[in-house]
Length: 336
Image 1: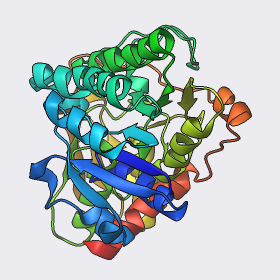
Image 2: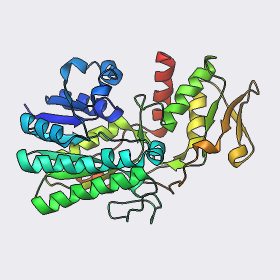
Image 3: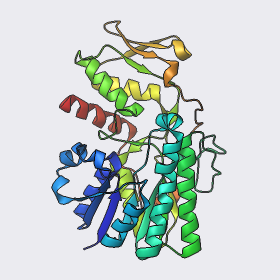
Image 4: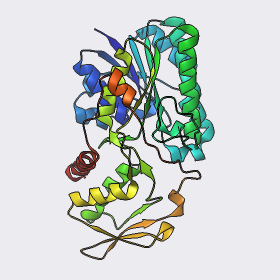
């Protein structure tokens, strides 16, 4: 039986990946902060909470990281934990640098020292491209992050590559473009949209306030991407891979598709921060804009080219953009 440590087990990707690994016969150790032990609803909903051995894993405590890796001797280590919200990274840049960047150095050094057979996966991000130098972005595209989160993740990405090349470690990174699901945290724009629209539909909320409606992202389904994450560590060589759909949609597109699920059509008025969205049937204001939700530095056109993963890993995303939005809305309708 293979043993795998998955950090960030209580998050969206941690839950989906744990289910995949359990289905493949792995012994799964779920690393999480002590403060997250009561936040296991994603694992509960998948029905796998009791199948995972939860372990205390503090990203900012090097001795804890060292002891856990030495004790478990995992075949595979999936590092999905981080301070992963871009907006918060502007407010907490130092914490983000340590949790999303320097912690990866501690993990890699522990693996090198006490469990060198362990294959390591680092969750990199399209936010590392930021001010893009080419469209679409490939594994060879230069990086130019535009947030403390992107900068921290870039350090983690490069230190993973450095340890791979310096110490012949099996250390790979997946450069994942935006991937969403009903398990997304409510602080992320896609889940904020679906959660708020259903609450408005049910009379539990007046309106939804957002930032830049014209921001575009390459959005895919997290479950598909976690299949790709597993494939990356099963590849015959350690390497870096982009996982993406190769299609972009705006926040406005996401809202319009979500509204269709609840038989609502949005009528837009105004431009920029003066934009307002009205329910076309009732003329009720349901969406407005606040500059508070704009990023200090917006990223450019993030569009991923996942040709390498499709050809070398035989990975293909299966859920369409419309299918993803519908899935998220239907889940909100079911549980709210």
